[in-house]
Length: 218
Image (tube, rainbow, N blue to C red):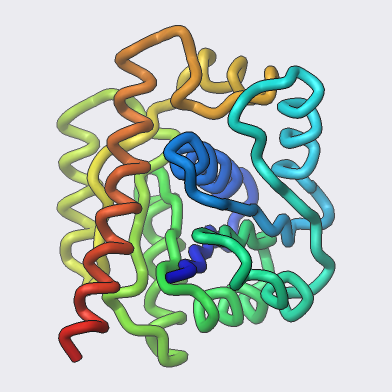
Protein backbone atom coordinates (compact mmCIF):
# COMPACT_ATOMS: atom_id res chain seq x y z
CA UNK A 1 0.00 0.00 0.00
CA UNK A 2 1.18 3.49 -0.84
CA UNK A 3 0.81 6.05 1.95
CA UNK A 4 0.46 9.81 1.56
CA UNK A 5 1.53 11.90 4.53
CA UNK A 6 0.89 15.63 4.74
CA UNK A 7 3.08 17.96 6.77
CA UNK A 8 1.13 21.19 7.20
CA UNK A 9 1.04 24.42 9.18
CA UNK A 10 -0.35 27.88 8.72
CA UNK A 11 2.83 29.34 10.24
CA UNK A 12 6.20 29.47 8.56
CA UNK A 13 9.11 27.87 10.41
CA UNK A 14 6.90 25.53 12.43
CA UNK A 15 8.86 22.40 11.54
CA UNK A 16 7.07 20.93 8.50
CA UNK A 17 10.22 20.45 6.47
CA UNK A 18 12.10 19.08 9.49
CA UNK A 19 9.45 16.38 9.86
CA UNK A 20 9.27 15.67 6.12
CA UNK A 21 13.02 15.10 5.87
CA UNK A 22 13.14 13.08 9.09
CA UNK A 23 10.34 10.74 8.07
CA UNK A 24 11.65 10.30 4.52
CA UNK A 25 15.11 9.33 5.71
CA UNK A 26 13.90 6.93 8.40
CA UNK A 27 11.78 5.06 5.84
CA UNK A 28 14.41 5.17 3.09
CA UNK A 29 17.10 3.67 5.32
CA UNK A 30 14.83 0.65 5.82
CA UNK A 31 14.45 0.13 2.09
CA UNK A 32 11.13 1.85 1.44
CA UNK A 33 10.69 3.95 -1.69
CA UNK A 34 10.02 7.52 -0.58
CA UNK A 35 9.62 10.92 -2.16
CA UNK A 36 9.00 14.40 -0.79
CA UNK A 37 6.80 16.71 -2.84
CA UNK A 38 7.98 20.21 -1.93
CA UNK A 39 4.91 22.41 -2.31
CA UNK A 40 6.44 25.42 -0.58
CA UNK A 41 7.76 26.96 -3.79
CA UNK A 42 8.82 30.19 -2.08
CA UNK A 43 11.18 28.51 0.36
CA UNK A 44 11.95 25.13 -1.34
CA UNK A 45 13.65 24.07 1.89
CA UNK A 46 13.45 20.35 1.19
CA UNK A 47 14.53 20.76 -2.45
CA UNK A 48 17.68 22.68 -1.59
CA UNK A 49 18.45 20.33 1.29
CA UNK A 50 18.19 17.30 -1.02
CA UNK A 51 20.71 18.93 -3.38
CA UNK A 52 23.11 19.42 -0.45
CA UNK A 53 22.61 15.79 0.58
CA UNK A 54 23.25 14.51 -2.94
CA UNK A 55 26.36 16.67 -3.31
CA UNK A 56 27.72 15.30 -0.02
CA UNK A 57 26.88 11.76 -1.25
CA UNK A 58 24.96 10.91 1.90
CA UNK A 59 23.05 7.66 1.84
CA UNK A 60 20.24 6.97 1.55
CA UNK A 61 19.59 9.53 -1.15
CA UNK A 62 16.18 11.18 -0.73
CA UNK A 63 14.07 12.08 -3.73
CA UNK A 64 12.61 15.58 -3.51
CA UNK A 65 10.83 17.53 -6.22
CA UNK A 66 9.23 20.98 -6.10
CA UNK A 67 5.68 21.25 -7.41
CA UNK A 68 3.61 24.32 -8.17
CA UNK A 69 0.31 22.58 -7.54
CA UNK A 70 -0.93 19.60 -5.59
CA UNK A 71 -2.68 17.85 -8.49
CA UNK A 72 0.58 17.50 -10.39
CA UNK A 73 2.38 16.32 -7.28
CA UNK A 74 -0.20 13.61 -6.56
CA UNK A 75 -0.04 12.20 -10.08
CA UNK A 76 2.96 10.04 -9.23
CA UNK A 77 2.24 9.29 -5.58
CA UNK A 78 1.32 5.68 -6.34
CA UNK A 79 4.88 4.91 -7.44
CA UNK A 80 6.20 5.17 -3.88
CA UNK A 81 5.67 3.37 -0.59
CA UNK A 82 5.43 6.75 1.11
CA UNK A 83 4.76 10.09 -0.53
CA UNK A 84 5.31 13.08 1.73
CA UNK A 85 3.63 16.40 0.99
CA UNK A 86 5.46 19.38 2.47
CA UNK A 87 2.82 22.09 2.25
CA UNK A 88 3.28 25.81 2.12
CA UNK A 89 2.23 28.03 5.04
CA UNK A 90 -0.48 30.70 4.94
CA UNK A 91 -2.61 28.71 2.48
CA UNK A 92 -5.57 26.98 4.11
CA UNK A 93 -7.00 25.89 0.77
CA UNK A 94 -3.85 23.96 -0.14
CA UNK A 95 -3.62 22.61 3.41
CA UNK A 96 -7.18 21.30 3.15
CA UNK A 97 -6.47 19.70 -0.23
CA UNK A 98 -3.40 18.00 1.24
CA UNK A 99 -5.42 16.70 4.18
CA UNK A 100 -8.10 15.33 1.83
CA UNK A 101 -5.45 13.43 -0.15
CA UNK A 102 -3.40 12.22 2.82
CA UNK A 103 -3.80 9.14 4.95
CA UNK A 104 -2.28 11.14 7.81
CA UNK A 105 -1.91 14.89 8.25
CA UNK A 106 0.75 15.99 10.73
CA UNK A 107 0.67 19.47 12.26
CA UNK A 108 3.91 20.52 14.00
CA UNK A 109 3.58 22.75 17.03
CA UNK A 110 5.74 24.21 19.75
CA UNK A 111 4.82 23.95 23.41
CA UNK A 112 3.64 27.48 24.18
CA UNK A 113 0.06 28.60 23.72
CA UNK A 114 1.21 30.97 20.99
CA UNK A 115 2.00 27.83 18.97
CA UNK A 116 -0.59 25.42 20.37
CA UNK A 117 -3.62 27.62 19.79
CA UNK A 118 -3.15 28.12 16.02
CA UNK A 119 -2.24 24.44 15.62
CA UNK A 120 -5.46 23.35 17.31
CA UNK A 121 -7.43 25.95 15.38
CA UNK A 122 -6.05 24.52 12.13
CA UNK A 123 -6.98 20.98 13.18
CA UNK A 124 -10.51 22.12 14.03
CA UNK A 125 -10.83 23.84 10.65
CA UNK A 126 -9.75 20.65 8.86
CA UNK A 127 -12.18 18.56 10.90
CA UNK A 128 -15.00 21.02 10.19
CA UNK A 129 -14.20 20.60 6.48
CA UNK A 130 -14.66 16.84 6.70
CA UNK A 131 -11.23 15.45 7.63
CA UNK A 132 -11.51 12.61 10.17
CA UNK A 133 -10.04 13.49 13.56
CA UNK A 134 -8.17 10.17 13.64
CA UNK A 135 -6.23 11.23 10.54
CA UNK A 136 -4.92 14.44 12.13
CA UNK A 137 -1.91 14.35 14.46
CA UNK A 138 0.14 16.92 16.33
CA UNK A 139 3.93 16.67 16.57
CA UNK A 140 5.82 18.61 19.24
CA UNK A 141 8.70 20.33 17.47
CA UNK A 142 11.17 23.06 18.46
CA UNK A 143 10.44 22.63 22.16
CA UNK A 144 12.55 22.90 25.28
CA UNK A 145 13.64 19.81 27.20
CA UNK A 146 11.49 20.75 30.18
CA UNK A 147 9.37 17.77 31.17
CA UNK A 148 6.87 20.02 32.96
CA UNK A 149 6.39 22.25 29.92
CA UNK A 150 6.07 19.27 27.58
CA UNK A 151 3.52 17.63 29.86
CA UNK A 152 1.53 20.86 29.96
CA UNK A 153 1.54 21.04 26.16
CA UNK A 154 0.41 17.41 25.89
CA UNK A 155 -2.34 18.03 28.42
CA UNK A 156 -3.54 20.98 26.32
CA UNK A 157 -3.57 18.88 23.15
CA UNK A 158 -5.21 15.94 24.91
CA UNK A 159 -8.31 18.09 25.37
CA UNK A 160 -8.88 17.79 21.61
CA UNK A 161 -10.10 14.83 19.56
CA UNK A 162 -6.81 14.51 17.69
CA UNK A 163 -3.73 12.35 18.19
CA UNK A 164 -0.56 13.73 19.76
CA UNK A 165 2.44 11.78 18.54
CA UNK A 166 4.95 10.31 20.97
CA UNK A 167 8.33 11.97 21.23
CA UNK A 168 9.40 15.54 20.64
CA UNK A 169 12.14 17.48 18.88
CA UNK A 170 13.82 20.11 21.06
CA UNK A 171 15.61 23.18 19.77
CA UNK A 172 19.25 22.21 19.24
CA UNK A 173 22.20 23.69 17.41
CA UNK A 174 23.20 20.14 16.44
CA UNK A 175 19.96 19.69 14.53
CA UNK A 176 20.59 22.88 12.57
CA UNK A 177 24.13 21.81 11.76
CA UNK A 178 22.82 18.45 10.52
CA UNK A 179 20.36 20.16 8.17
CA UNK A 180 23.06 22.49 6.86
CA UNK A 181 25.14 19.42 5.97
CA UNK A 182 22.31 17.71 4.08
CA UNK A 183 21.48 15.38 6.95
CA UNK A 184 18.36 14.85 9.04
CA UNK A 185 17.91 15.14 12.77
CA UNK A 186 18.62 11.45 13.36
CA UNK A 187 22.05 11.90 11.79
CA UNK A 188 23.74 14.11 14.38
CA UNK A 189 26.81 12.96 16.35
CA UNK A 190 24.69 12.91 19.52
CA UNK A 191 22.91 9.66 20.38
CA UNK A 192 20.38 11.26 22.75
CA UNK A 193 19.27 13.80 20.15
CA UNK A 194 19.04 11.10 17.49
CA UNK A 195 16.92 8.91 19.75
CA UNK A 196 14.49 11.77 20.43
CA UNK A 197 13.96 12.25 16.71
CA UNK A 198 13.75 8.49 16.06
CA UNK A 199 10.97 8.17 18.61
CA UNK A 200 8.91 10.82 16.86
CA UNK A 201 9.50 9.23 13.44
CA UNK A 202 8.47 5.83 14.79
CA UNK A 203 5.31 7.36 16.21
CA UNK A 204 4.34 8.54 12.72
CA UNK A 205 4.90 5.01 11.40
CA UNK A 206 2.81 3.58 14.23
CA UNK A 207 0.01 6.02 13.55
CA UNK A 208 -0.07 5.09 9.87
CA UNK A 209 -0.27 1.44 10.89
CA UNK A 210 -3.18 2.19 13.21
CA UNK A 211 -5.04 4.05 10.46
CA UNK A 212 -4.51 1.11 8.07
CA UNK A 213 -5.86 -1.29 10.70
CA UNK A 214 -8.90 0.91 11.29
CA UNK A 215 -9.70 0.88 7.57
CA UNK A 216 -9.35 -2.89 7.37
CA UNK A 217 -11.74 -3.28 10.28
CA UNK A 218 -14.45 -1.21 8.59
